[in-house]
Image 1 (spheres, rainbow, N blue to C red):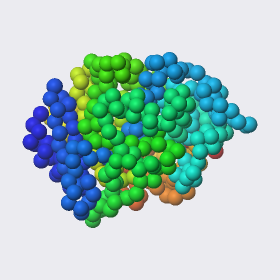
Image 2: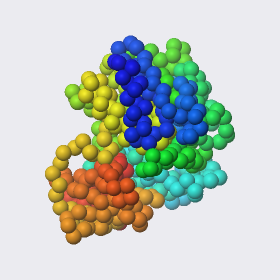
Image 3: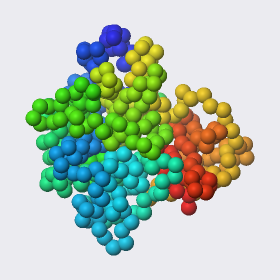
Image 4: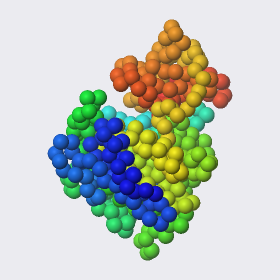
Length: 440
C-alpha cells in the first residue's frame, strides 16, 4: 500500500466531490495507514484531526446490535423471545406488533416495521409513547423478502437493551462496549458532550454549507454516535475471524452472528446480504466483506471488514456527497488490488438492458409514514413520487428492478425493485434502498 499516493488522492477526490474534510484509516497486512484531509468545517481553516468525531448515522446501529449480542451471550437477552415479553409497553389495546416479533428480526431488519418517523413529530416523545405507537403499527407482510430497513426497529432494540441492562442506551454502550475498546464517543443528541464535526450540504458551485443535526433524542440508538475513523476501525477489527475482543470484558465470539447472512433477508439496493447487525458484501473474487454505511445530516461514513484476512477500512466525511467519494475510492482501490467491496447504491456499475415499465406497477405504495406513487410515462418510463412530490425518473429492467435518476440533481440515485406476492403472482410491493412498501 503506497500511503503517499493515497495521501494525495484522497484530497483530490474530496475536492472533486465537494467534501470539506474527512479521515481514512486502513488496516492491511499487519500495518495501519491513516490519511487526514481538509477542514472540520468549511471555511474555518480548522484542520481535521485524527480524533475529530464525525456523525456516523446508521453505523450507530451496528454498535447497538453488538451491545445486544453481548447481552444475548451473557443470557440477559434471547434472540427469539417475543418482544412484548420483555417490553410490557408493547402490550396496548389494538396492538399489532410485539407478540410475534423478536430481537433477531429487529437486528436483521425483518420485523416488518416502517422505515422511520418524522423527526419533527418526536420532540419530547417518551419511550412508553414511542413503544405504544410501534405496538399499534401493522407490520408489512413478507413478499419474497423479509428485509425492510427500519430505523424504528433499532430504536426498539435500544429500548430492549435499556430494559435488561437497567441503564440508558448511552451508558450501556459506553460501559459494555466502547470503554473496553478505548473509544471516547461524541453524540449528536442531547445531553451535550464532546464536540463533533458539523455536516455540510455540498453545492454544485463548489461551496459547502454547514447543516444542523436533527435526530431526536428518543431515536439515539439508531443514529446518534459521532466517532473518528480510528474508532470505527477499532470496532471493525472485532469482526475479524481472529479477533480476541477484550479479555474479561468483551468476547468477540459473541459478535459472530452479526456477520452471518440471514436467510430471506435480501437488502436489495443496500448490500448483498444482512446479518444480525452488519451488512454483507461480495468482493469481485466471491469472498465476503462485512460492514455498514451511515449518513447523518450532511455526513457520510463507511466501514468495511474482511473477516478472513483481517483487513479493515473506515472513511468519515463531513458532506452529503461523501457516498460518491467512497464509491470512487473503493473502485480505485479494487483496481489496484485491494477490494473492500464497495457497493454502488445508484447501480451505475451495472450494465442492464432497459425495458418498458410494466403497466401493473402503477399505483400507490405505503409503509407507515413512507408513501411512494408510480405514474407511467408515455415513453415507457415511469415517475416516482415520494410523499406526493416528484422525485425520480425510473428506468426498468427485465427482473422488475429499476434505477432512479433524481429530477433535482439529474443524477443516478438509488436502486429499487418491485416484488410479486408468492401466493398470487400479483405485483404487491416496491422496495427502494432496502425499504419495502405495500400497494394500497
